[in-house]
Structures are given as C-alpha cells and as structure tokens.
Image: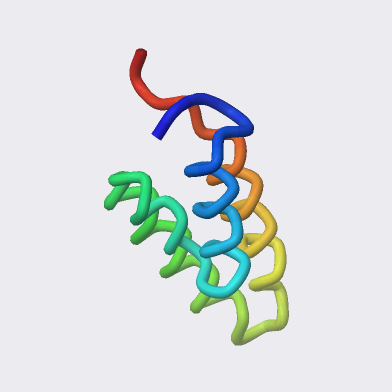
Length: 67
C-alpha cells in the first residue's frame, strides 16, 4: 500500500473501525495488529477500549509504507 491518503490506507482505517488491529493486519503489520487488538480487548473491560480503537484507526490511516 502506498503513502498517507491512499485507497489502501482508507480501507485499512475502515477495517480498524470495526475491529481494532484489522487495518494493521491488512497492511502486513502483524505485531502492531496483535498489540492493538489485545489492548482494546483488555481495556474494553473497563470501558476504555475506545481509546485503543481510535488509535488503531488513526494509525492505519497515517501509515507510510517503506519507500
């Protein structure tokens, strides 16, 4: 996927909207996907998972691949 604002990043951000970390997984960033999914799952227990959810969406949208 290309740089910021590319179609791939928009799709990744939309995927992260539904499941935190899914967008990172689509971008091929397995470790970041696991971190964000795990943190969101843990923090939703105390109703703070939305913070990680938003971070996941923004991270997927702003990702710049290796040039």
